[in-house]
Length: 265
Image (cartoon, rainbow, N blue to C red):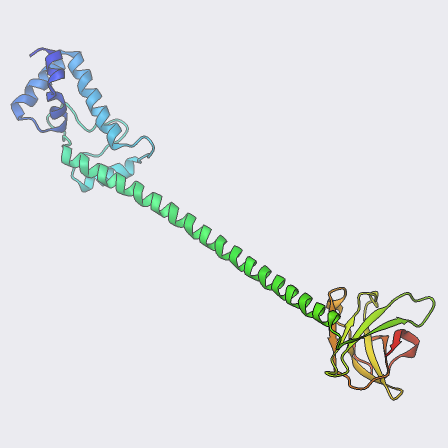
């Protein structure tokens, strides 16, 4: 058999896989020593098997190779050794070992991919939960604002509420407020959008005048400035309303020196 016939016969692949009878192995080994073309073809087949075992997109460390080959009882790989050798005293890998090796490597790649995907999904899940909480919070805020706006609009349109304009008591003062009072239900709402910030440590206080005497109905909530109607304590029969500037604690009597706006019913 000529070297070219041997190469085309497929026997070299079986030789490298270690599945030929010993007599054939000896014959091919001799031809590899005699013909460089046979020797080079054997090396090419060996490299092809190595390339098949080592996926080009997945680098395998020598330590990992040694552990795997030790497990399947095959000669370990390093930078200087090959899977197959012409020396009879060296181990020869067979196709079953190669298949097992490929299976182990494939499983490692698959586990690595699944682990990365799991981590990515965990991050995406956390982000989705955070986004969902943000959206729920924003939706709650918007729904509350919508409900308040609808309630305020119903009061402004209602014929049951009397609208009393509170005008400035001084020519130097240009502030105003608007009171909405229901003489039937005694509900009291104030639109304070015309009042400026009273300053640090100060607040506006609302008074209802009944039989010439002031009745405290509450202080203004700073968080409600320019945010619609603010509800105060209910009052039954009143003559007028007034607003003074007081300390943050509610006063028992109004400070007439700080009287800002007032209006009769």
